[in-house]
Length: 138
Image (cartoon, rainbow, N blue to C red; front, side, top):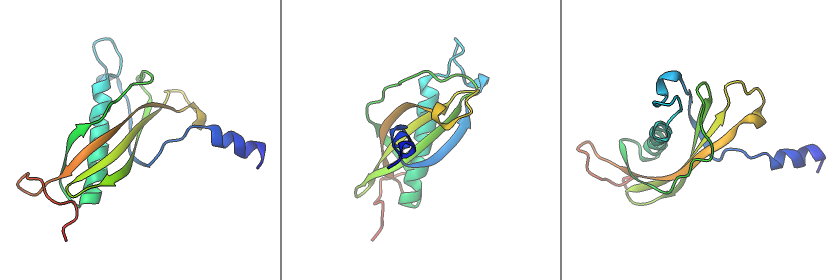
């Protein structure tokens, strides 16, 4: 193994697949000019439902979000990348790990990105009437 390969292994990287990518704009800020945590949670929820909808083949709804810590603030102009990874599929539920990574407004290099938060979302499959249904019909 070369030194370069070792260095690359030490660089933290997102887990899962890129599901949403957007820019934090000035209109998304709170009273103090910061990007609020709720804004990030909203986009994490959208990403979880997109991933779950692909797996369930239709409508889904989030029923739980496991513990979440915010590791660093998000600045206006940052590129937000939301990654999802299906962890478990039950009869009617899907557990999805969601990570948010940010590249600062003027970040040019890939190593400038940093993880902001992560959480496990529990999502259920719904039928056309909004009732819980099996993820995969037999």
